[in-house]
Length: 61
Length: 248
Image (cartoon, each protein chain N blue to C red):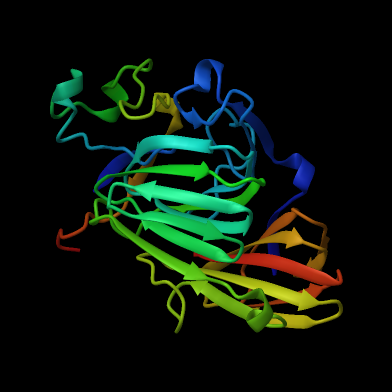
C-alpha cells in the first residue's frame, strides 16, 4: 500500500488515516494535502516526501 | 558493468551547522559547537544532488566538534539509521533506553520503526568523526530496535568484512542490504560478489582505491550496477573503503 515518507525523519502519511490531529481528514489524498503543509515531526516540506510501497510490519504480505 | 554515478568528495552537499540561531534546538553544544556534514545524497537543505541509490537515502560524512556538540533528542520513524564511528567518541542516547558510547571501529544500527528518538553527542575532547547511513526498511512501523557492532581494523585487515547483513558475525537487518568494510594494503585486489538485482555504493574513507576500474581518492564514491563481481584494488598505503550493497 502506498505511503508517503518524510525524507527528513521517516514520518509516514497514510491517505486512509489522514492526520486528523493536524487538521487533515481521513481519506485525504496526498495530492490534496496543501502544498505548504510540512512534516509535523521535523518541518520538512511536502516536496521532501517520497511515495513508498513497503509492507507494514505485522500485516499480511 | 555500468556506473550509475561517480561522486567526487568536493561534489557532495556541504553543510555547516552551528548550535546558535535557527538550529539552536536541533544542534547541541556550546555556542562554538559546529557540525560539518558532507552529504552524498539530497538531505535537508541540500536538494540539488542525487536522491538516493537503491534503498539508501542518506550517506552523511560528519564531524562534531568537542564539548557536547551533536544533535539533541529528536524523533524518527521507519528509517534504519546506522552510524560508523571513524574517530573520537560518539554518545548515542535513544528512547529504547540505550545510552551507548562508540569509538573508532564501533557502529550501531538503530531501526526506528514505529517511532524512536535519539540524541547524538560528542562529549569527548576531540572531534567525533562519523558516517551516518540511512536506508528504507523492509517493513514500515516495525518495533524499534538497537544493535551495536565493532569492526576490528587489525583483525579485519586485508579482507572484506561484512558489518551489517545476512552473514555470520554481522548485524542483521530487515532489508536487502549489506555493509562491508575493507582496510587493505597497497596493491591488494579484493573481489566483492553480489546477487543479481543488487547495486554497490562504495565510499573511500581513507587512502585511494580503484573500484570497478575507476580511481577514487579519499571521500570519493561510486555507484555500480549490473555486475555480480566488482574488484576493489587498494592504491593507498592503507586504503579504507566502505561498501554498501543494496537492492535496486
